[in-house]
Amino acid sequence: MKHSLTAIAVLLASTSFAMAEGELQLFNWGDYTSPELLKKFKDETGITVTVTDYDSNDASLAKIEAGGHGFDLVVPSANYVQIFVEKGLVSELDLSRLPDHGNIAPEWMDVPYDPGRKYSVPWQWGSTGIGVNTKVYSGDINTSALFMDPPPELEGKINVTPEMNDVLSLAIMYEGGEPCTEDTEVLRKVRDTLVAAKPKWQSMDYGMTEKMSANDVSASVYWNGAMFRVRLQNPDVKFGYPQEGYPLWMDQVMLLNDARNVDQAYTFLNFILQPENAALISAYARYANGIAGSEAFMPEDMKDAPEIKIPEEYRAAGRFLPTCSPKAQEYYTAIWTELQK
Amino acid sequence: MARKTYFDVTRLPGFSTIAVIVFVMLYAPILMLVIYSFNAGSSVAIWDGFSWRWYVTAWQNEQVKEVTLRSLMLAASAATISTALATMAALATTRKRAFRGQTAIYVAINQPLMVPEIVTAVALLILFAAVKVATGYQGMGYLILAHTAFCIPFAYLPIRARLEGMDMALEAAAADLYASPWQGFRHVTLPLLMPGIAAGMMLAFVTSLDDVVISLFVKSAGQDTLPTYLLAQLRRQVSPEINAISSVLLLLTLVLLTTFFLLTRKKD
Picture (cartoon, rainbow over the protein chains, first blue to last red):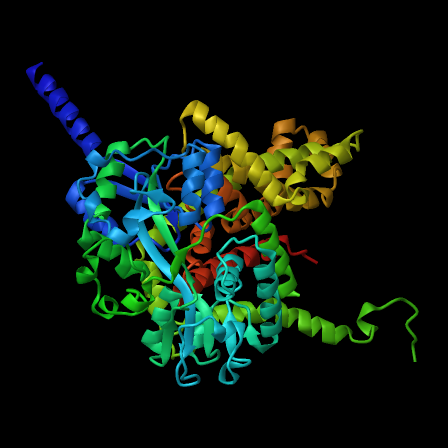
């Protein structure tokens, strides 16, 4: 009798211990979560993180809105943060449970879509600029003129990524407007310049990591992380930050309303707020993370990479893209359709 | 000289040219994918020499192992259940005289072949989400159920084709020789039907293994299958690891399909 009681006591104790460790369901972009980060997290906290992948903001939103998904954390892009908040799909964070919340770098703390970071914790961020092979073109690379009015050296050798929001935002800022503008005069100029420039482009395509490494394409409107990887293979390629203005993007972790593992979720959020852990995220997916002091823990080739850490003089021109009004969206689509012809 | 009097499509001008173009379009991309899975470098466009490196990388990738096992388990379950159901459906629709509503039943059984997959997927997302919220159960059951449903016609068609080629007189002969209905089925119908059942099962297995759209919409937390995992990897950079995984998947599919053809081959 005494034995069986002890056995039950031990069993109960071990069960509750297991509960304290538990599991966590992270719904994240594919190929975006460092296995090392998850291993370190498990070693330190005993919590097993299961990652399920998605490949677009819309896909994640649709699954979460439908309900019954079983996820605890999701990682939407900047322009989707407000949508998740407005639809009531995420919880406001209890900052007292995130002692390392102050580690968020000042420039990423008061972002327009989540002032004070009450709903989200930074995951990774990057920018859209122009990668240029400086052997082919030696002039100033920090301008959207490279694709809006290509210099003779780059005619027929420049690619533009087929991403409507990125390209039109760059073009609008080049013409002196604001992203999502409804000013038809600016938009008309944008359209005319783009349509006139298009014959001088080589292509509107993805896959530039390969093509620029192999010198098949000499310049491209593209993302910083990809251009960083290109430079490691082809040192002539430099990444330009258009001084007229360029888009910034950021993905951040949010706590779902119907999360089942809330305690584990807070443990994880605070874990990635620590610089040495945030650095693991960056080391894997090769983008910066928004946690102050994490550079010191990054791999050697990333620490001073100008594609990862934006040089001081170009920082001010970076802009988060707002979610456009339906009217602006209509203009965007119209210009984009004309450009695709 | 004998002149052909019937229509022969192979004599149309340009027939062989078009045929060659079609075959190149079908197989060249797959060939490229397989070739670059052996690339020593980390690019899928620049050849850097031969290496097994990416197969090793994929083999050591815990997540790849996990999603592959899940996919195989799912395909095996869905193929088994759907083949059992399809066999019964095929027997019910062929081993008797034609009856009213037979065509309607064919159409109903083959619905997954005709309804756009995305429609089924969205419908399942909405329905299953409601069930998941109501019951709290989020296991693999939903994926197995959904896969079973769309695998049924793939199992059904070869089994029905086999049954249609089988003489009904065989069962009548068995009955004449005092076989009970069950004995007749067990010792005459079923053995003759076996190649059809095996072929149907393999087709169902491959169909389930390749599915992306429905899996994507139905999966719950921690239920990535190999195809949904591969799809999500493409966001950043395509590495030859994807080629290596795809090549293995292709090999598995080829083995199964070859077996399918051998089993359904007409014996002259």
